[in-house]
Image (cartoon, rainbow, N blue to C red; front, top):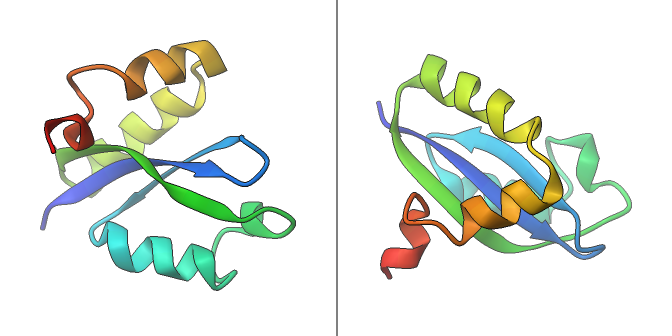
Length: 88
């Protein structure tokens, strides 16, 4: 099963990083306030980074690495060729 690492831009301009095997469905859960407590008090705007090619384990490890990046480093990642959304 393919897993993805994603970053969502939030209503307070913060960046939320997560993993899912169905990003669209997971984003809709975030919109409804289900799941991550992070979205209590802020709303998800849209997915701005997507990275595929992971299994559950590698997605979790990659998520951990991304969460430790500074905000500036995350924005560089979002603008990089690694972002599968850049190809669209």
